[in-house]
Image 1 (cartoon, rainbow, N blue to C red):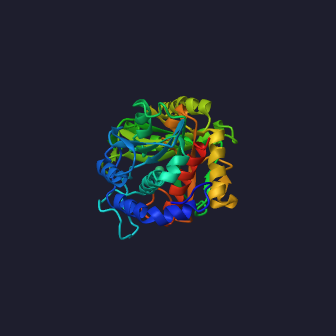
Image 2 (tube, helix red, strand yellow; image 1 turned 180 degrees about the vertical axis):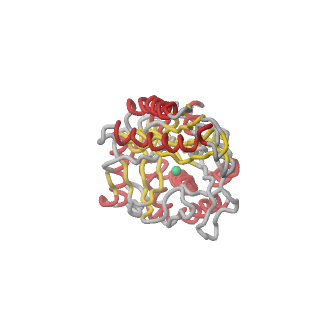
Image 3 (cartoon, helix red, strand yellow; image 1 turned 90 degrees about the vertical axis):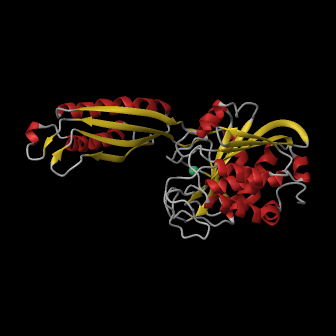
Length: 394
Ligand code: NI
């Protein structure tokens, strides 16, 4: 590695020195996807890849997470780079030679890529000349359970954020031009909350509806009524989403079921709105259900908060991406995504930034066909490397 100053040649150097290792690790992780906190084999693969590097390694963080610490050549602050490790309960349909070997589990959100890019950054920054340039410490944080388990929250509860001054994370992003980094000051991902609703009617014979309170028909009315919350009660310039993703009732064609249940998610950016919506959902559902001789019960969970970037961290990331990739490949986003992200828990404690890295026009995240051009991986590793160098340059 002969990148003495600046970032010129960094992408090529990472590609040349570690490109093959990064891709091999990504494929290895992709082949054996693990869910939630249960990322033991993934952690073993990461540890094997980090072996021999001058890192202080802590394992068993948030069950199967890893924090690896690199001390730089000079004194200074501590920054962290975080990657998520977990896969999704999806059956892979990419047809790739290194496709998932486990039915019903797949790296469909690119976390295999995030993890291998972070290992690539650790390898790169551990090289003598680059390590010497770091005035401070870099922590490489490998986090399980991003997909719903709140591994980020557990890591923060276990004290991972303590002693860190600034934190960054990348996410591969379909729909964004290949090799383009994008971020923004303030909210970049929405608060992602979830709910379950039960409609409690009265069951009966399919031929005698007058003797029952049909949970199916009432659930249909409640589902429709709930759609008026965002359309009629939320300021139209305020982002909000209410999606019912599950609905179910009944056991046979000729029985009116007593109960129906639905499950869904609510996405918001504004905190007041976030906390106001559950009450309105409950009032509306109960009102509709009671008007139809039934009742409704709402079970609401505040899950991931808004992922809110620190303006200075976001500016640093864009500046670094601009000089690394070229100005046209560093984009300031106009709007957040309504997707959720548990990196939010770190950003509640620390200044930092969440950055999207474009993989172009490919099948979306969380789809069975999600796949990306692996040329992005050394580029992402170089971006993480350059962010650390820049943040610890003084
Ligand atoms: Ni993801």
